[in-house]
Length: 244
Image (tube, rainbow, N blue to C red; front, side):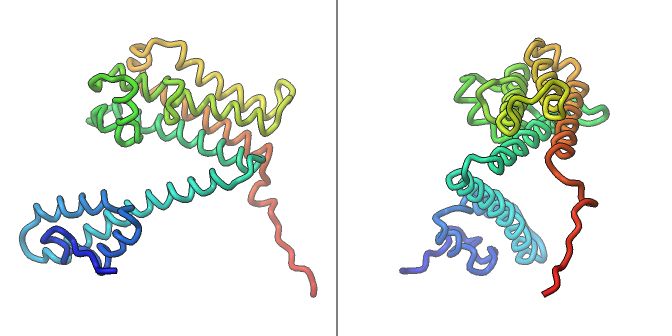
């Protein structure tokens, strides 16, 4: 098969064989390449080649890592039995997503800082396109915050992931008694979720840092309880070598 060449004059600044490799994986890293060429086109001065190659390596590593992570998750979701191992993966992902969205939202109003705008936040959460399809409106503070915090069907919203974590805990250990460790974890997550769902979005925004800290505390508490209930501490794992 004939080797394809880069359609820009900046191909010489890409890492060796990177363009051919990008074509071999059917455009997996096409978006990072576009960023590379856009950035390089603005460069000038000495050491252009070395600076451009360093930039290309950075962008391509980010793109490949992101896409490979997506491939791994896609393969696991298509091939993993829906047993406890799968449920724990789902549980961990839900807790991590709720926690990270809360941390990103806190950057909007940290004292002494200038936070990103709401469009940037939506994009950083992989939520911008979903927002436009669902809300069908320009990005505004109230609508964007509502979408990221309490939307019940968007899989990256805080409320969705807190609810998902609660449901998954029930699948892992159904029928647990009140005041059990698992029930305490569900209680912490449910309290955090309902606290958000039964407030006006304006009230949440008025005290956004505290609200997001409460979400993070709930996720951390649930994580600690789940760890203590289902996983041995590191100090308890003792390896012994059997005599042959």
